Image (tube, rainbow over all chains, first blue to last red):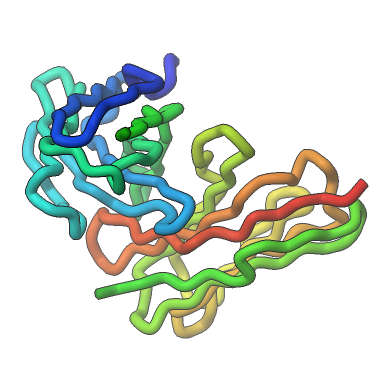
Length: 114
Length: 110
């Protein structure tokens, strides 16, 4: 099975712009989560989508949004970019095992805001 | 909010020595997962612990979940250069959302 894919892998934007990142989960996985990883803050949960519905949300401002399509592919959007949004954005698709969800991470999109 | 603390932040060991990283939560966890992220890579799922006092082993790796389900540890016996990376714990507090610890970056001195 193909793994989780994320596009683009690298992105450079300027302050004030907006950006859309894409994630294609492993075939059959219906849950997709997004994380922001920075050296200072570590891995922080952004949101999770399941069957096109946002199921969980982290503590990020409203500039961060996402959606999931009927084929389980997901996008996240960041509007009015700030320098502090520079980070590795990771997408993870999940499959339910007995009692827990096992997450598979994609390679990430490295966003640099200048 | 619910947090998962992880120590140490960094650990340098001689090849062949043992390594341990610890996770603690002030709130009872429903389960805890462990991930490994190689330099330049992405987190890879290692294991899931659910039961109080649970111990699981994967070759040289031993994972423990505390009796109160508030702490967990990962112990690597006789480290090898392939063990290099950052080890994260991630706890769940009753829903599917995972709260990641800050990670322990392991470097191996050959």
